[in-house]
Length: 258
Image (cartoon, rainbow, N blue to C red; front, side, top):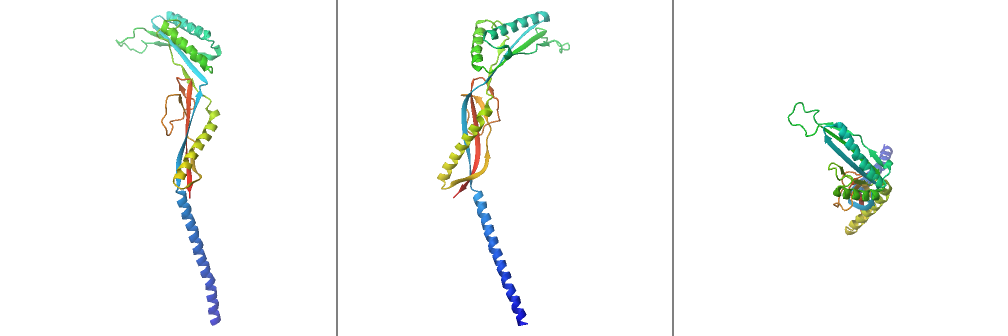
């Protein structure tokens, strides 16, 4: 009987050792997890800003004209004269026919929906058309637009017709060609900001916790932007100036290590 009792005690000792080892191992694992959790809470969010001035590569120049009257035949003849005057001017500026788009002639009958109303328009019909120039030769269009304004002021070519107007705009469409380099530079700027912060706080920068490449915006050069998050994406932004400012702000979170 004593021999059996001693055997049971001998078996109980290894079992206790296993339990003790399990508790020690579990405590070590839990301590490591708590340490990792605390370290994961230590991070910094920094931003990297990059701006680049670029030149527009597309000009869009709409020339719209209209005339009102009571006789459609004479109206068509007059608007045809306006069209030929504009086309002649564009030809003199060496604008290619492939760069010119003729819009449809639009006719509005101002009395069509009056239903006996006493407020009648002074002219029954309004005839209008738009000629639009699309070209990558932005410098040539910029120069031509200045001549048009001079002509308007002097009453030459289009200036005798008060309803003729224009709204020249420029676009930059080459964003994809500069995006990679701008993102790289913005990320470098963000890392430099993180290094400065870590140095001041007695830490060092670890791995990236989270990153956002940011949103690109394109605005007229000289328009001015405030630091911070950009607005909605504007991949082919239009504006009134040939030179544009491309801007991106990246946001990166870095872990901080002791």
